Length: 610
Image: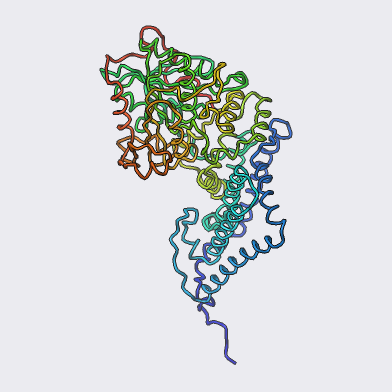
């Protein structure tokens, strides 16, 4: 009888190289067991850090937590597919056929059939073993098929209103991102190999970091995205020389030292978002838009918003306009003698600035002579995935939560923003920190991103209801100080900058808002996203921007007509500013003769972390 067993050294599975498994075989079981015990001990410490604040009542998980909304929303989808046995069978059959095809493909490969290499566009699966190792290749293919199947179920679910469908699609992406085999220890080839190579030492360190990050979040996981020890505001960030020349309950006003003998007669006032801190525009001398403006001959003033607490609970939009924008305009006039300014608003800072200009127009106040809006929405019809978190039920629950303490903790907003790009801003760091046990690299932008701010109760509630929920500003229904505002009253020239890959203020939304104003609007589209598309110094020669003289109704038609220019939009904006008024005067010192310096830039308000 012939011996059917393969000879020694012969591969029993011709489509599989057994040596690929060497890196996944534990070499020192005793060391592995010891480190696993240590990792479990650290995991227990992490659990204690999570439980303790809840037992003491220091952390109260509100009913508006995303996981609650996720379950409620996905139940609507499940109900549709399970209500009809025929639909259930159809969905199951489609999935099983796809999985069977993957199984047959895997069996063919193990029998010796050569598999074609796929171009790997998904960077989560960049490691070579996601294709060359049959086990991980099978996991990857199954995962991608199930993701496509699940997203198709949402797309084909009937009877959902637009908002619920939007939520279902968003939360399904959150689920599929979370369940990626990349995020689990033994289904990710990299983490599997590192665990074997280090005998589990990576998990000991990773679980220690997990406990530290929950402790830092006071009972909530605050995933570190960068090495925070390498950065300090005022030491190697926000270094442009200047002085705080005025301070109110809601803001400090900073004026920067000139670097040119002559400056533009009309000062420049920057109104950043209060959701983040202003130094995104002054990360370091090489990336600083503020420094660049100073070097172009602007007298630059910046509003640095307070990091609010319970004392600011009743500070609403009107307070932020009167004690913020108007207060800064008064400081500019006292310091320079100039009544007219060029103003810049970034993101929600631009939305506030637009509302302020509409209010000023009714009051006969013409101090803002031009406005530049960075990634600013005034019409929230196409506001993107952030609208998932805004409906009457969620906003009411959030208001109730904010009333208890007077503000919304910064971690809540940070979580919402990170969820918009979970596959980039959450899960890679989860894997790197806790499964691999690697320290994150030092990155100034991510340090700024983690330096979150609280949201004052009245201010945040007004913003959510009037902008995201009811779109009152663009519809001429927003009421401030007893007046109903209309952006058509705003006649000053506007430079409206959008970024093509923006996930917070989508370019389509920004473009639509251009039609809300009553004066001339120059719409410019920058490459990249919400931050990199704005903070793009000319000497880097990165990205590009688009302009067009045509003003069609739809953003897509504008894009077809737009002309692309390589590099930064900053010089284009400078020419626009100088075309409005290029008169120059001798350089001004901070505060002038009327105001004394309170502190050196970047001031004191920016220093408070949460």
